[in-house]
Amino acid sequence: MHNKNSAMAFIVLLGIVSLFSDMTHEAATSIKGAYLLILGASASTIGFISGIGELLGYGLRYLFGRLVDKTHNYWGFMILGYAVDVFAVPALALVHRDGWIAACVLLVVERIGKAIKKPAKNTILSFAASQEGVGKSFAIQEALDQLGAFIGPLLLYAVMLYKHGDEYEVYNAAFAFLTLPAVCTIAFLLFAKSRFPNPESFEPEAKTEKKDSFVGKKSFYLYLAGISCFAFGFVDFPLVTMHLAKNKLFDDSILPLLYSGAMLVDAVAALFFGWLFDKMRTKALVISTAISAFFAFFAFGMTSPGMIMLGIALWGVGMGAQESIMKAAVATMTSKEHRASSYGAFEFFFGLAWFLGSWLLGAVYDYSLNTFIIVSVAAQLIAVPCYLLSERSFADENGR
Image (cartoon, rainbow, N blue to C red):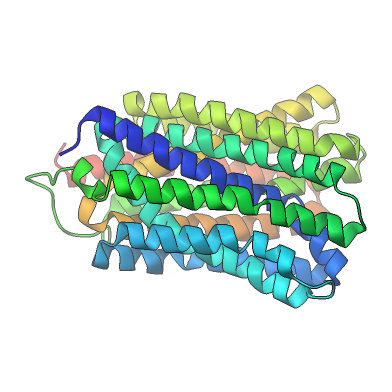
């Protein structure tokens, strides 16, 4: 049995792992589309590969969650997943000038690595969170994660600024540089494993804990319906930047700064709502969703820079909530024995709904901006009654 100090040390260690991991792949995200174009890929190919990568990255999480629950090999899946995830990125520096096919394969492999690691990572974090509070624990993790997402693109910008050569050579150097945070990711992960080889011991088995899975539990299905509605209406940030660039509402050079600002809001929101979740549980989800649901109204429906930035800040609130308290809620609803499968199901449905929402709402945007805004806001607000019904159903299932 570990004490609270050990649990917090473990949570922070995992947060540092996430920081370096996000430095690696979020930095790559900021330039990979342009790199594929330089290598010879068409715009349609880039879109197709991005879609396939996301579908595999989310779709395989339930499968790996089941495997983690069956084997209890938490560290094995985490180390394998992180290694595939972070080393596929600097491997892009090895691709030849016309090697867009190899680059596309590496990008898909990177998403598969994320699918391998995610259920195991969320599960062992939830074990430690039982000592410190699930909301606070997932919030600390998300804050460090987003710090890496903020720093990574800035470091990459500096590398590309001072590297001389043609476009291919500059991008090549940028991806090669990402070997450093990739190595740091694995080094801190192995250190965490050496210090805490049995993270499941953080959370003791409850004497009355049932060994059944989430299958057949109305409360969990209602929760999945809620997070799916939220994800459907919560469009990806590239659609925001496309709208701003298309309508010349901001200079193109400002767009990366807007994203960095959203990441900072994300980190702060994760910490605040994580603290609130430990005190209010589902009500914290309701509040965060009710606030962030209106981001599309301001970001897409307004032309004032101040109102647009407010919309982007609300988008950051939504990101902070989904990466912290939405995951924290899963830990409070599911048994320790089947938690990895539960996280796999959560990630699968959330990712599928986000993919479909971004795709379909993108089509609606081309048809009618007002309809786009209404559907986005409405879909997210529908999540609120789902959360409340899930809470009530969970109380009934547990005789509360």
